[in-house]
Image 1: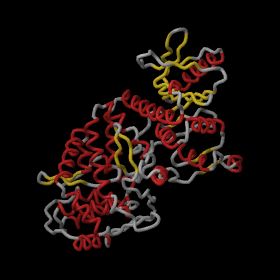
Image 2: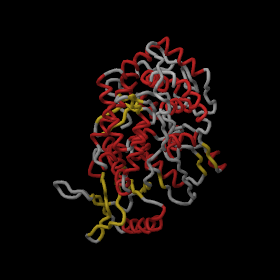
Image 3: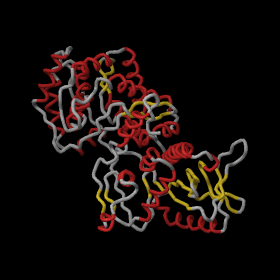
Image 4: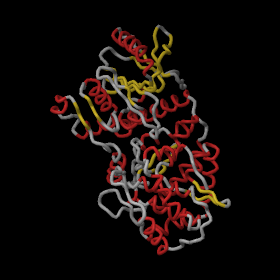
Length: 478
């Protein structure tokens, strides 16, 4: 079977030496029965202690798609599986320059359409947890909620059925490529041989085939009408990325606003009794008519500070500054009124912003696809424009809306160069960890460097902390 698509090409760009590994593996894989070899690769690539050997696991998955499918050697027990593993581990080796990944397997859950599903955070990408928070709103925009639920349930089954046996043998993660345990081998064998799971896998394959044939081919091997799952931690991220490719620009922008507004409202209600002080999709009301140039995805009044969420882009910054000055003038004259666009049984909710109230603008663009490489450059005197992923991170892990206002103010007032791998989220973690203070010496020096992977482990750590304190009612993010 030949397999070439944009996903594999992207992997080749990141791992230029992977092609050699693939060809080496294909020569071995061709000897074996396709059903057996697919299950064995699933066992190895999903094994927790192999998480950071990304190049090797990608190469093994890619090799599956290139084998001829005519092999007859069988792997039906742990002894033969062990021999197979030692055969391939003797001809390929891990790259010591790989990044160490988060060693999780379903401990973190995300909410999709008001239900929680197990996910994997250690994908090799930053902001995996945050990106998946947008999945539900995008699926609703594309009218594929039921199909996406099937996808989430499929992945949840894999995580929940295997997590108790997929346990690291070490106290800390490292770059390893090791033989999975016998109990885990048989757990995977039983799962992939289960009729119920096979039917679910076939349904998901059919859904993905309609969405993106390349994506379906990436994650499933089809042989004689049988479906064999291929394991990759990026499965849900790639599904979300395909959804983004299908969405119109208006749908992309709308789903970002909706996801952030819903999460912001949840956080506000968790810490504030006065729900009338929170608006969703709010506009400025002036001279008894709406001002429609800009729509705030949320407006939250807390402790005499109002936090305004607004999606924008670089082409509208001058127009935005004019709008902000207009808002400041209205506020100074006690004429600033914000009105919620939707209507309830009592009419439209509204907030009058008093002159003494402090306004914090939370500006953001529409970038949520973590599988794409992006770079953000900012003049130290310009306003901070967040990625939606960063705002979602703040909303998921903040102690209050007041804290977000305080952090946003810190960014606007701080003129130092903040160099981080995961953008504002890294800065927020360091700022919060150090009691909302970044070392004065570093600031005076003019540059603050924040190490890589600062935020990658954060969702898992916070989930474990919360489960430890509330074992009967764990909280997953928010």
